[in-house]
Image 1: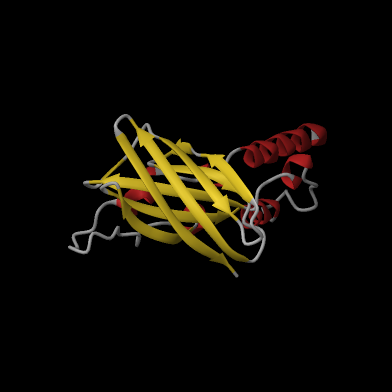
Image 2: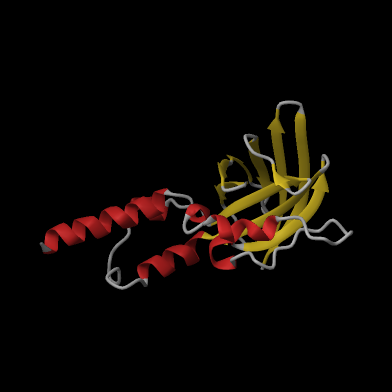
Length: 178
């Protein structure tokens, strides 16, 4: 019985490592904060967002007629929480954890209060050392996310491109890891 339970726990942890951190615990109620606020400044209301599962909002902008909100999830912090769960202490993570990227970057494109679904979204990121990376995002619960490496301190130049039919959205911003 003990071997069976250990096997089940190892399989559960492996499944959590394989799934993007942002997909964990993302119920539809946590997306309520992405409805357009009644303000005339056009900003999104993120007051109902759960930073534990949605990450920290790092940037907001307008591009291609869409409001964009970017959230960043620290993958290592998420894995530390999983390891601290009852029954998981002392478990060793496999080689997949060693290859995990440092963060999960999410973008939420919205127009007229509705998320842009069915788009292809990608990121190009240049690190503080000049190293470049590209990542294709997966659609999940009204947003698009991909694992990215932001492990070094300094300023990262982040470019996002979204495409759906005739709709093309290009955006870029700088983000500093302290």
